[in-house]
Image (cartoon, rainbow, N blue to C red; front, side):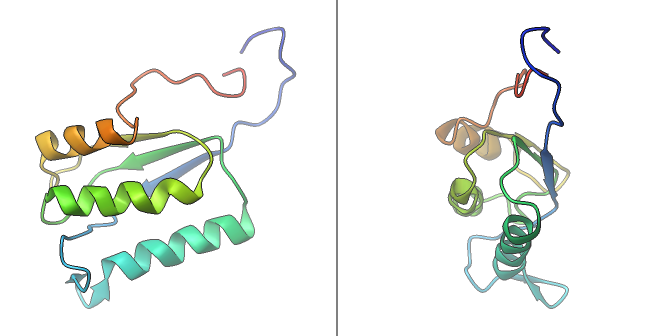
Length: 115
């Protein structure tokens, strides 16, 4: 933390395992994954407000499709902070990196709030 900035909590939101699919009605174990992600995002905003940083970890897409990653990126536009996306075992790493670049979510070094 830098001395010039006042100490304050860094609010990090971790979104993990949304398992999105290209199909809007895609489901996993009976759960429509797009609807589930939207419900989580709405609850976060209602209860916690805007974070300083989003860590999106693992299995962002169940089918590894470019469309699924774009749905994820568009879903994060309600937040006013940067995000960092990290691939999981169901992700197609090359597709994730390509689309994450479109949303400036490829950084591996992030400084926020003096941290």
